[in-house]
Length: 375
Image (cartoon, rainbow, N blue to C red):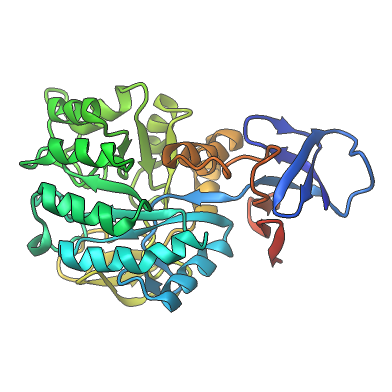
């Protein structure tokens, strides 16, 4: 199938006009200008980008990944797929290590079938000073036994873990997880600058939703924000929804990390669903006007964001160039998670792509070489 478009972002190059040849589930060729033959799908007024990748998503369509129930997993995946997210992690909120191990085991077959990229544990090794929407009563310090149990439960598919490295045993946990091939993210943390740097030196490579649920930047104690922003290889997650971060803060981080910023949704069950009352793990959440907050104290409880909306916000409200934003939603998260088959429209990669109109609204989604969304 030959697809032509007014603009095609690979995202290493911007091709105007551009074309992509799909062979089965893979990209065969990509080019600029006149295609080698008449197009099967001609999109002269559209922009084509790689399928979006969301490394941090808890739910959508009214349900969440917690518990690993097959029907719920399918609903979350379908909800975000309809908004252009063709690859995602299943993020689990804090629970007991035993309950998390059960959920991870339930999700492993879904990862093996290719519906998910992997499992992300956001907890239980988080700071009680910055719990966010996690149940403080369930937060614990990491032990070698619990770390090894959860790694073993993932059978090689535990892809990322968020941890507060200043906790007793935190740096050892970073080393153990990294040695097991797990991406370690610093988040929900009260770490000082030096403690954050120590975690990066121990193998951590990511900052979970930078600025949110962590010790704030201060001119005398810069904390984890400065450590992550100045580290040359660290990647930083950003929730670009206008609720978690002011546009100027998104702009600051994206300017400091032009190739190592990663857009995430941190979406909970209400993403792609209506306002109402929901549950995030053990916590009661109220969603009003599209904003999710804990019922008891009003703390932000994830988001109702989609990756398509995050891309629009970053371009239209933050004022960032589309190619940089698309990179943060595709190639950068793919590199962060070690996913070699997705994240770019280049020969030999999976044929996942999103067709956008001039307002960056999703018109079509191609997943593994098959149109799954067409508006």
